[in-house]
Image (cartoon, rainbow, N blue to C red; front, side, top):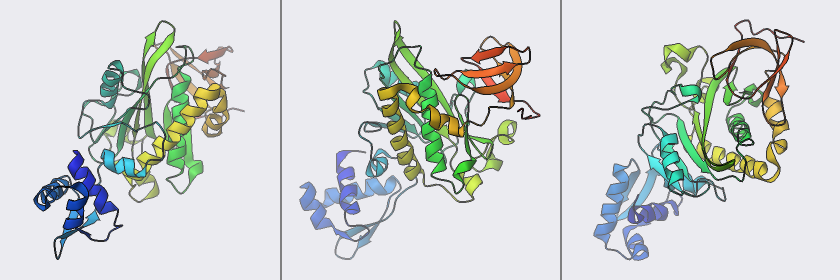
Amino acid sequence: MSAGPARVLEALRSTDGGPCSGEAISSLLEVSRAQIWKHVETLRRRGYRIEGEPGGGYRLTEVPDRLYPEELAAGLETAWLARRIEYLDTTDSTNRVALELGRGGAEHGTTVVAEHQSAGRGRLGRSFFSPAYQNLYTSVVLRPALTTSDAPTLILAAAVAVADAVAATVPDPDAVEIKWPNDVLLGGLKTCGILMEMSAEATRVGFAVLGIGVNLNVERDELPDEFRHRATSLRSHRGTPVDRIAFACRLYGSLEEVMDAHADQGFAALRSRFESRFRMPGRRVRVVDLHGAVRFGVARGITESGALEIDGDDGKRDVVIAGDVTLTPEEEEVA
């Protein structure tokens, strides 16, 4: 949004729902009343409901359900995250856009948000279902002082942040779980996926991009058939719509907090919070590594570096650094 309409919107907000005279806005912006009217029409085209008041005043009566930067900025309490927001009505992938921004020198905390993704991506090349104007699709550029070997714990830290934001939005926070390494579950069903991509300089991280997709208001029966049985949304779980702006602001605040903790003390500062929602230990799992090899075992926990430990069916303790881990169909619990 250009400066003129943004300043008009700011003036309308300052009245807390009351009328604001066109003359007052004109004087504040030092432009003509005709120009104010044009700015108001721009806001109306963007979905803001602005009623005309007798005598030439205006009243903001409704804000659109859009993740506009000015709407996010009004609710943000972060110091560095999402202070620069690139908003897109539609894109192929927010991660692709964020990677391009990172290569172009975008600062730490630069955030991309889109209303719709035509080719949203998940881990291991999977697609991510991204219907328009219902959920949250966002990617954040990070410039951490990390070696590439320490970088994988960023995705575990991000899972903690998302889990905290989801738990604060549903009536039963104990229903929120983390599935290693990057899924957040609600009532045992996936509601969020996280994808990390990075650019390295020798053994150091040049920059990383965290992509986060959260099912907020899509109804469960609208999800594709192939994963409807294992996914849900916050709306379907709690039975009422989610304020997307409020959720996004809560998530960005939580993500900044965990990233600051990670920068100060590493994953050790967040490990207990991860483990408090990590309920895979003692359950049988199926592991598919990056080469397609499959093994079965019982999940035992995570290491200091964030890798998954399992007791394999062959009797050996395995450490899984990367791969696809799912609960076996039996979901058998083992002491």
